[in-house]
Length: 564
Image (cartoon, rainbow, N blue to C red; front, side, top):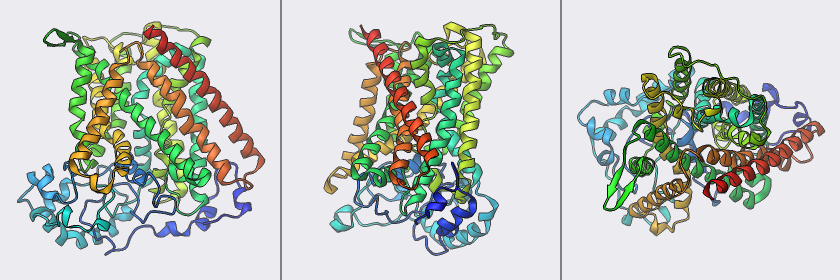
């Protein structure tokens, strides 16, 4: 799908809807027809139809990126079953199916509807699809499936990945679904550290937050332009492949996976901090060794989340993690409640500018916009792709309002005593404080497996086909979880939580969100980019590189100082 030079030059940011429709006529008929779905798996509320790998992903690592990030970023119907080989029947390995054995397919169908209801334009298609699936669902839920054992399947027919089953037919996203999924990705644990960012950089540091929001929107639009530039581009690694070849694909994939891995480490640190606030006297004594509350809760959290990484179908966790939007709003409401209703007050004036702390503030604000690894998947899943810039604007705009609101209220309430997570400052005797802390504790537990799974599936691809077995995959995933625990335990708690987040934001988010989209855009559309876009991309690259260098150096130096 090639675009003429005049179309490329027609707009500074976004082409018109008419141009997009001419450049991508195939998008108007992306839903499969009745009878195309030969799978007996549940439909997702928001993802794209599964297609053959494009020339950019075929035989190139990682092939599982699209599949795993779709699970991470979209809200799907829950279907709980443990990780294993495809030979294990869905019925025998699914808690939901075992619980509903003997019930009619209609009841089961009602219980596994998507969280976000499809738009009314899909109703007619769903009714036809329902008629097509009635007979199949009866056998799916009431009769055990009989599949050949793995040993009986010819070697050339064995699947590359035995980890997760993904529906062959998946519905497409409406505007509202895409906005919800985008906000769910952006509004993570970063919102808890925004008051600490003002403490580090002062009130004028909020200008950095606004600048990062605008640049994040612009680079998101650039990713869309990259996806539209060539046929077969669907994911961020595909864009890297089109821009810089196989080396670019592998390098960008590694950066994205390291960012997800670092988020999992941050989850464990956050869980330990907040649970220690709830139960400060908790400890565990083993012989002559005593584990304090931080270490104890970090280990306990690891033991809780580890079984969730063994699930074959993570759509149940994806379904629950969609509450991340509600959780973020609830935490901000609790913060305002403590200030207004419980009379903690907003009396602290703070400082206008704190230059020594600006590098840390840069990393913390940058961490808030670490969703660009998912945006290409959201774009590819849209029913109307012309809406993407508006969806992106809405996601980033609403998220920025939450970030700024939490930052201003938290810093006005706690001033220079603001901790790296404002939940640690909330009065312990208030019920609303416990609601906020428990909400903060519950959210990462549902997101941990979804975050580590893309990395795990990419490593599973590297296993020889005869080693892609249940036991080996369990060991691999368990080893990944344990490694995040060991790194989390090596970081001094409380003092360095914000510094770890600032390091991730400075080093990885700057690359993924600001530097690489511009570099890939210039590399893919070289010769077709007008001078003003070249200037804008060059400016963003320079700003991103400067922020990455300054923020990374400052974060690492302060971490080393805490050790010494």
